[in-house]
Amino acid sequence: MRTKWLALAALCFAELLVMVDNTIVNVALPTISRDLDAGISGLQWVVDAYTLVFAGLLLTGGYLGDRFGHRRMLLGGIVGFVAVSVGAALAGSLGELIAARAGLGLFAALVFPATLALIVGIFTDPKQRAAAVGVWAATSGIAIAIGPVLGGWLLEHFSWSSVFWVNVPFGVIAFVAVVAVIPSRGLDAHALLPRFDAVGVVLSIAGLGLLTYSVIEGPAAGWGSARTIVGLLASVVILAVFVVHQQRVTNPIFDVRLFANRRFAAAAGMVAVAFFSLFGFIFLITQYFQAVQGYSPLQAGIRTLPFAVVVAALSPFAMAASHRFGPRPVAVSGALLMAAGFGLVQFVGMESTYFGLIIWSMMLMAAGLALISGPCTQVIMDALTPEQAGAGSAVNDTTREIGGTLGVAVLGSVLTSVYAADVADRLTAIGVPASVRETAEQSVMAGVAVSERAPGDAGRAVHDVVSSVFIDGLAQATWVAVGVSVLSAVIGAWALRAPCVEAAEPEPELVG
Image 1 (tube, rainbow, N blue to C red):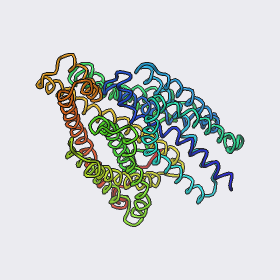
Image 2: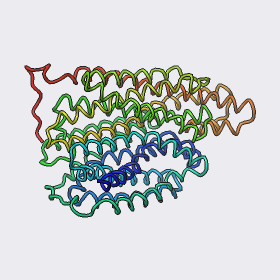
Image 3: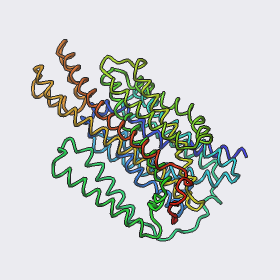
Image 4: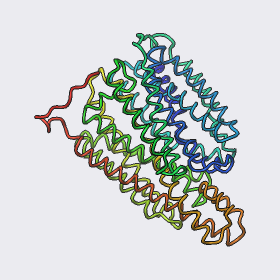
């Protein structure tokens, strides 16, 4: 019995290792921007290179575990994650760092599904398994807070590369723990799967990669440019071909047929929208804290703690309310709370205080996430047959990562469009030279750096302009989050109705 729970601790630590990388880099973005001369689109790629590859290969990692053994994939993934972390820490250019982040996403996709698969194999008693899976799920939420705080502390004492160096000792600990407490026999007994869906993997990565690239580079290339339009249209075509292929192949990498179930589709969509909005907002707010408010990386990281505290506090209530009233009103209320939280951001200005306004908006977002995440996951699993549970869980995890990836891309690009369009004109109006304006246009942190080099009142004037334009962009970006959250609530209110409401129109029968 004791060995089982030690195994759970080891697996959750391995999970934490890769999930923290979703958020730890956010507080380092301003420093990376200065040291590697990165604009906003470059910073978006630093974040999205990881989540995009992670999401794109998550199902592939699970398939490889089924073929070759989950313990073997877990250990190999940890070794690769540590090795690529060294490369990321030593990166001397933005391109090298983005490539390393993509490599980290690849090995994270081997680690993450293996941890859950091993937990299911170790805990055979249904009650113990439910408790273990609950601890595993909670670990992902804890990572939301640990990432920015740990990253902030490291940046207080070391350079930005420390957010990658820290993976080395943590990875060694995770590897030793897994070897020590996870048995090498029994759990990796598996049947060889039929032919692997290599075409599906290539199509999914190509479609999502081109879509994300086109959205991130849209502000620089121009939204009406042939490059952007062709990129967006081509990504839609590739993803459409991917969906058709997944419907025809015997063993799809992403079982799109699960979305024939209305409740499954709605619940997965609401979770994806929640992570779309949250990841996009965290990407923006950590820059706001440091560029506009002047907080240090550690101070900025600590100020993201309300997300984890509120989610942890309200998650049990959300599940209890879901059992009492049904998941539909709870999840819809969560989407509306998230919309209200993003709506409060419209009142943020240069004089806004953290405790006067910002923390309340963040708490509303976190409360909404708690009300969505647990009940919608329950809907997803209840909508599936036992044979579909594994595929449905993997689809759920993948939609979360894809939602977060697109959130950073879309919200970041909205802010970039506003910032790039306005900052030059406003700096020209106060007499800033053209060479200085060009530097400030790259990103808000570049603008702050310009203001710090300017003397006295001129520096304050530049900082005020840069901060004001950034806040305008933040407001426009969060309007997108408000809109998708409200739309999520409306669709959820319709689609999450119990099946018995539509007795005359039964749910489509799933094939799986």
